[in-house]
Length: 102
Image 1 (cartoon, rainbow, N blue to C red):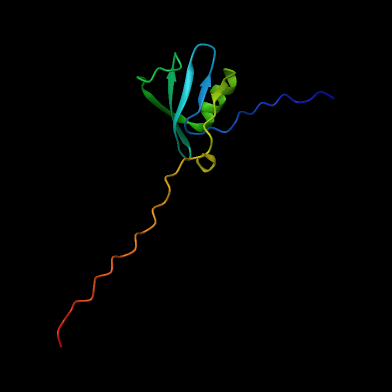
Image 2 (image 1 turned 180 degrees about the vertical axis):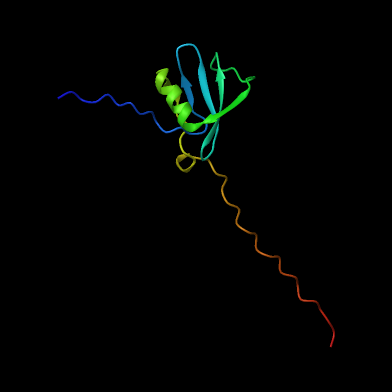
């Protein structure tokens, strides 16, 4: 029994860069049904018009053109961010009791 060739791609995520034979696709935004992407000839090219398509049609296009994922942006929950140490509130300065004469 032959194993089935996996025909599905990884889920599309904002920030991914896909490589095809002669071009790249950069995922700009991902909505519920639509996706914004840039199609570039070179990997570092940024002055490119942003295009919009349905997520399903872009998945089919990437599958048919045998696109390979160049970089995978990790989900935002898994980013290892360097955080500044939290500032502890300084204790309030106590005012010296006023020397009132009685």
